[in-house]
Length: 356
Ligand SMILES: Nc1ncnc2c1ncn2[C@@H]1O[C@H](COP(=O)(O)OP(=O)(O)OP(=O)(O)O)[C@@H](O)[C@H]1O
Ligand SMILES: [Mg+2]
Figure 1 (cartoon, rainbow, N blue to C red):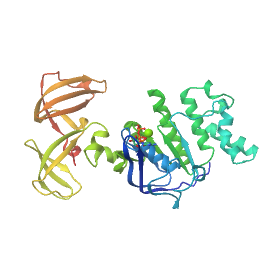
Figure 2 (spheres, rainbow, N blue to C red):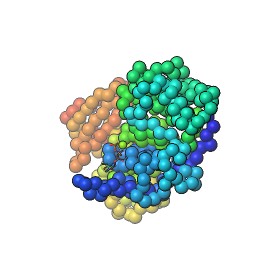
Figure 3 (cartoon, rainbow, N blue to C red):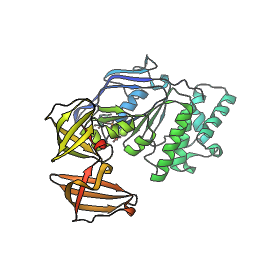
Figure 4 (cartoon, rainbow, N blue to C red):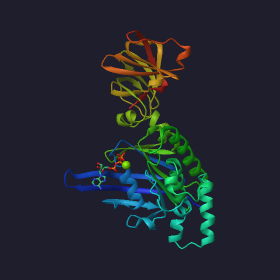
């Protein structure tokens, strides 16, 4: 397939629904995002944060209240979906039940009056790409959910769109198949190098496949970054809590340069990385991930209120002053395990402390 990958630019994109019962619903608010050519870009956030609305505006199924959508610097905001050169894969596959796999995939090409021999060729390339070569004659009811989703993907790919959109394509599949299919989608996406916008509310799925993610809350962008950056350097408490587990504690800046700061947390001073200079005495909130808590290291002590063996980790909850501290201690087989009710000494890995 011959895609010259295209950039997608969202400019001040806004969608307000007017409803009878809830009044004005601000589904998407002033979103500005630059998606690079060939990028796998994921919209992530809790239910109702505006992911589907945003995706539907890119696809052309929903008209923006204001703002613009640019594909390769061309404003497509007022174009109908079929004029946008976009492929879309939905959660419920949306295959035609009475058509076999071949005809499902060929459907769009026939509408475009593509010559028959070319249709045959392109359908088979698409089927091969999703590893469904032997399924051309089946109808959707004779296939599993995962197989139907592959066909839906082939149907989108066969049109050779400039941009591929996915709305929670894997949420109807069981956990194991979900992991397999997400790797497949990523493999195919990398192979053709197509610009992709993907919606999920599953943060581990987003982390696994994306070049970049945007975290949305109430239709407002919280952070646009790589998966590593949103995990290690969340922009705010919402992001820290949404991506993985986070201990968020109070601290005070003792001294600071542009790149390092001494932060006091409950009487213990840590030398931590920072990205801007903070004034001495500033109260800050710090994020410590459960796996960055050092079990048994002198610093603080607290009572274990929960101790759960997870196989690869021993997970603890500690009552530490006003906070519940979550700890994930890896490789517990070779370590001392604390029981509920025991006192534990613990500290934090300073380089993993993130100052908000
Ligand atoms: N056609 C509509 N009319 C009125 N309100 C709508 C409409 N579509 C969506 N909304 C509202 O806009 C907000 C965003 O909805 P949206 O479907 O984009 O969320 P989402 O992030 O996709 O959620 P989910 O993870 O549950 O799919 C919600 O408050 C929703 O109720
Ligand atoms: Mg949705």
